[in-house]
Length: 325
Image (cartoon, rainbow, N blue to C red; front, side):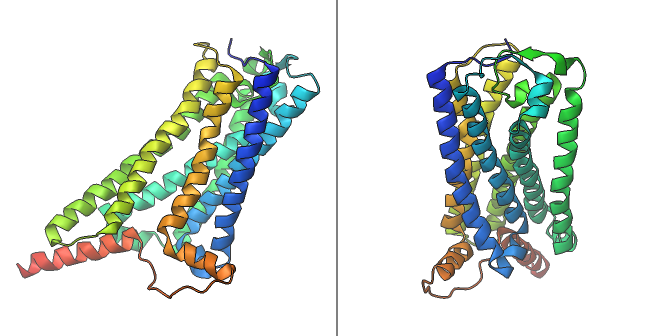
């Protein structure tokens, strides 16, 4: 137990699925990254989202590496040859990208959640503290986390955990690192999206209160925020599913076939594609930059205000009304 099962047809399906979803995700990530990089204002305004897209690009590449690596093991007939956990981590080229491809977007999500809730709860502090240089500090922390988490993963297989022999060469996170590290990994990535969901919920609730106090209406912006809230909740489910599957395998609770593992573990890849669609749907600036790159003329419009700017303005209006009364 604590390992995968080998079935040629199911494992081949797994490899093809990972290659497919990885290729589509790479295209989506490169599209949004290109739009950000080719516009100075977008780079500055959405620097954290740009980094998030870069991390999601790494996640997409990890799917391609995973499908290629396991496909090679399967086609050469060595997938069912036993291997140690330590050898999986240090001799295979995809476990590291699997770790970074899921943890780094989670770290970026934490940073964005912090910025989101601070802008609503403490708008004055947000304006004073969250400068461009402060965001650059956040950006610098992403590669620092990458180094620290890979070192921790490597250290986790140095001792007895690394001597454990697994029956297949899937070399997933649960069979390439120790039990404690694999448990931390999957709980951590789910927890970050739970935090993201509740921070968005706080933003939504605060905006509703401001709307009641000022008797103003946000119109379609409330609809957009509600959809973001719904997507955040869906993200928890999509990311919790592979976490449950992996941890139940690692803790010898139950076994899963490669079909179930492939479908559940591909869900974060689908989420990356959906996030790209949402970015195009709700960010006029991003669409406008896309039209500019393809040479299509669009009507000019006023720069789109972020929800943080609108919330700050609403807070000021509320304060003025209070003083006047």
